[in-house]
View (cartoon, rainbow, N blue to C red):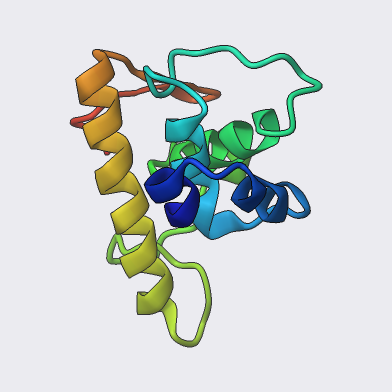
Amino acid sequence: MWLFRATGDETYLDVLSSGNNGGVQLLVSKVSSLTYLTFKLPNDNPWAAYKENVDMFVCSVTQKAGDTSVRMSPGGMLWFQPWGNTQYITSSMLVLSVSADYLEAAGATLECPGGNAGPKDL
């Protein structure tokens, strides 16, 4: 995704569209629209699934995805795995931080099953 952003060469998008690469979902969402999280993609658009996935991930981590929210430890820490959990927390916080910046720039909130998530929630 970074190579596409740097060069504008759409052949890099072919690699991305061949699978659901979780680490690039946020970048794809940003590149797919000029106003992140406020655009609507047709269901047959190959990038629509990326936006839906990153939106649901953000909702899950912010505890606004209902039954599919990420579990939390009794002390309030996100709990993805019983081993190496902090690597998942660290990468999740990066996604949330970037998402918060995009939401704030767009003056938008994310509609989650459990309520809206705004930049301050993230």
